[in-house]
Image (cartoon, rainbow, N blue to C red; front, side, top):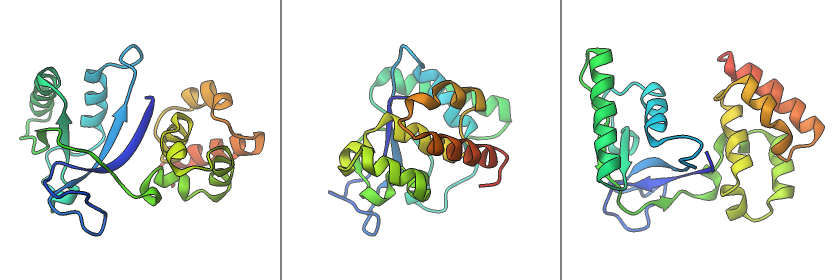
Length: 184
């Protein structure tokens, strides 16, 4: 994963905001290196990360794959069908063409990291501009670890590249350990 950004897409309203979303869906934009992870693998993680059989209670929170081209659409449909066969249930997650993606407000970017004051203080010093923080690969990785995503081995392997002080590294490891046990 190179970077992630949260925002809104799938609707027709121009310049949506969290409090004036129109017909958009809250979304995550993922930039990735296909030499490191395939689109198919990203889709596998996506299908495993939510219940694709449960209908959303609103368009704002529906689950969807927004594809860029015919090849992505085909792969999304194939993996959806595989998932449906595996689960023995109908998948309700939508597969839709990507429309314009609007970035969410700064306070939504790297949400879990923003809730961790001591780590956020370190990243604010590294990235004083909100746009640089939002586009940071390290901040995206730390945000995921804070939410318990990834593995302890993966964290240990890359912790020295995340820009944190030794105390920040120790704190991240504590938070990850707790979160990965379901205790966040």
